[in-house]
Image (tube, rainbow, N blue to C red):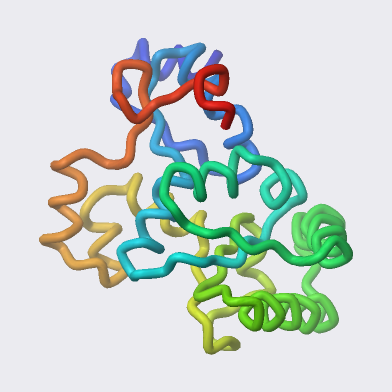
Length: 201
């Protein structure tokens, strides 16, 4: 397993640079013993820091419908997760794999995504999480009154250290404090890590 090789090579933690593959985050930590900066913890930290308690979640079906993402965000961080309707979830999943992952961007897809976001906002979402690497291709914060957060960007910036965080307006002092106090790392030794068996997450 690559994670075991990273740990053997001296890595302090890992950053899994994909949303959907956090489905196997617990297996990586348990199988390698390597600590992991979990994308859900990073995203939830940004939301709660901004006072956001209800968020619309966009991503693949796995991200939107399985507990490893929205369930974790609600159970661990107290953030209510709102999902698009069944037809919109099917649309997003199909577009991510059938268009965006292939570099195809259309105005029709952009318009449908805007409508999905507007619907979630009308249901009470205070912000939108783009929990898919490709969704920023068709969703821009400039097009919406509601805050839009790319989980991939937040995750990468925390993993890159204080300079990356400060570069996104979080503030150098706050960025350094977050990292010196410890990023939201999940590990076998840390109290924050809970296996699926003992948490049902």
